[in-house]
Amino acid sequence: MATAAAPRVYKNFINGEWVDSRSGNAYENRNPANADELIGMFVSSNAEDVDLAVDAAKLAYQKWRLVPAPKRAEILFRAAELLVQHKEQFSKDMTSEMGKVLAETRGDVQEAIDMTYYMAGEGRRLFGQTTPSELPDKFAMSVRQSIGTCGLITPWNFPMAIPSWKIMPALISGNTVVLKPAEDTPLSSYNLVQILTDAGVPEGVVNLVSGNGPNAGAPLAEHLDVPVVSFTGSTAVGRLIAEACAPEFKHCSLEMGGKNIIIVMEDANLDLAVDGAIWGGFGTTGQRCTAASRIAVHKSVYHDFISRFVARVKKLRVGDGLDPGIDMGPCINEQQLKTVMDYVQIGQTEGAKLLTGGHCLTEGPYAKGWFHEPTVFGDCNPKMRVAQEEIFGPVVSLIPIGRLEEAVEVANGVPYGLSASIYTRNVNRAFQAIRDLFTGIVYVNAPTIGAETHLPFGGTKKTGNGHREAAIAAIDFYTEWKTLYIDYSDKLQRAQIDNAE
Image 1 (cartoon, rainbow, N blue to C red):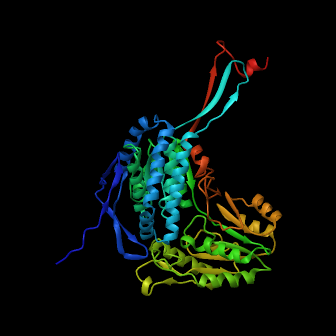
Image 2 (image 1 turned 45 degrees about the vertical axis):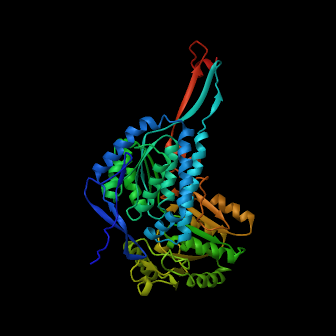
Image 3 (image 1 turned 90 degrees about the vertical axis):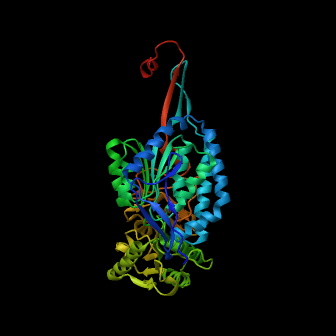
């Protein structure tokens, strides 16, 4: 009698080798569109595994920091080339473990490609400053220096893009890394780490430990030999990370929640605004920190916008993201689906008008997955919980507004400040919104998603703690400035004292 093949067990990557966890345990990674499909088994790491990974990274740092940055860049460039070659397979792997449609996972892998190429280019551009000294026969300049081992804790919604945002600037700056990917989507991080190894990253420079937050993430954030921690995830967990980093004054970058808004003015191109609202609200099943879960619409076009928007939402096809005819995939897991269902009930209890959706999908092709209908609430008060709290699902709240100033007040009246958008043909209004919206990112005539790797990414208030991902801003986080003064006067010069004479 034939027996089913044993599932593959994916191990930790420590000091250049795939190794078992000291815990001896493993967990299942299943397809959220079909829970019967087992992607693989992944080891459940503990503090001992983290210690081994950090020890390897700390030892490797002594040599890696001395590798010239252009040589480090050559390795990253090779990694980018390999990612291009494996893009389609990695995209399919990601859809299977995460659920978002294949077009989106291709974009996720492409973002990792873009970030890797970009940071490879920075290997010859880790610029400092040179400046005239205020004293004669003295030279002044600044240089960047690496820091050490970086602990990177990443989420499940962009399981290759976001690790690349953190790994690539850390490596090009001369640091080593220990990556703890989200337990829901570890395969994509395994693929990325394997590519870096194939590209020639030395042993111990990149390490990976899989597992959950309390057992693997917390020991990594708290580790005394990890001076840099970068986290992307919920605000609640981000607060715990910050508290863990504070006693040792670690570099700590937090990229957390969002409650983003699209403002639609009376002079907007409504068809374009509807396109943006569909993509912003229901791309990645609404499971983006930049998702447009609120839409503030001018009262004069409110009903027209609703009719167009709801008609489009009703046509969205929900299902397995590997099916080319599908527009929106499942929620990541059962708990997230339950959260969405809870918020739908909260919205109805608060008095929001359910315009479409509102139900989980459990019959037929949906029976083995975590699916929910695209859902729209209308006539929302901006203080309702569905208009204030991050849902991380396919739920959009429509808020009528009377003027731009009111829209900006609504936009800024939430705990988060990641992304905002305005649709208008009036350039004066556009620039007023750009000035007054207190978010890290503002779009004009585009949805709240679509960041590019060569510009800073991040937000204000409870979205982050002031640092930014991507671009030069990331290198600022992963390096320390060192200021150099070279005095060739052959005498004591006392800066401001002698300069005042």
